Length: 320
Image (tube, rainbow, N blue to C red; front, side, top):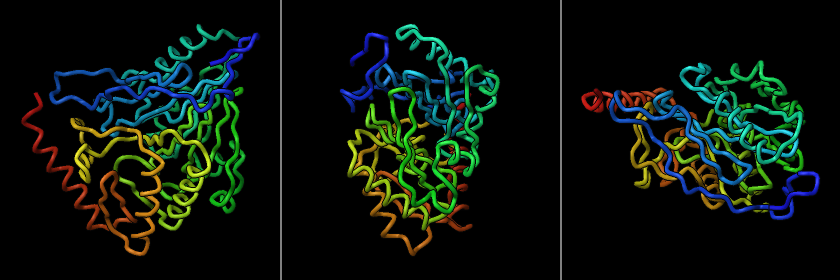
């Protein structure tokens, strides 16, 4: 990693860099008397931090991502709770920013808080940052978020080309990727080669609200990954177990045997192909690395909730 004479980090010459995913993610606790930190952090490289909220805070246990550039940092998603006592996200982020600035001193360093989409478990922490100096919190609503990044109107966004977003030498490509939610955005980081896909692509249940939009999105992402050096595809949840085709139940607060967070461009293509194969058949479709919920009806929803209740009842005697 090169640093210029004026202290600027060169985010271009060596890109995409090799980072470390050698981390065991905490996956909740079995008994109430056990504890784990509300936020787990992992430095992927000296300028990129992966964070996970604990399942003891919220069963969704979303992943968040903090990317440092020369002029400002980007926090992707703010998680599933706004209560700083339950989950001190801002304090955690401030500590990470201080740590990065200690190695790369500069004045007037900013922070942008943006979102992969507007569901509550990705935006609930926004209030912790509203009064933070030098911070821009991107609106969660689809039109406003697309306008912030320059993606254009709702009608044009789905078919629009990616737009660049510069953190100060570290450039991201932002794509409108609706289907899971109309506000869904995907971020490609040229420095690490990581494609941050939110809830659109992840090792778990792919809930699709608008299937035609999802199909267009998956074709767009597969094409993008075929023309860019994508090292990893990172979504915001782990819901699949190591056993192929098995997902942990909805609402699980203890998930031993999770599979890895990271997915590959080949798995992204597999999701595209799977989506094409079930495009005209709403329902639930299970594959080795993901489960597609194609505009599920009341019956599929009842089954999902019933399984969650059964697993919760089964686990109850184990909790102290």
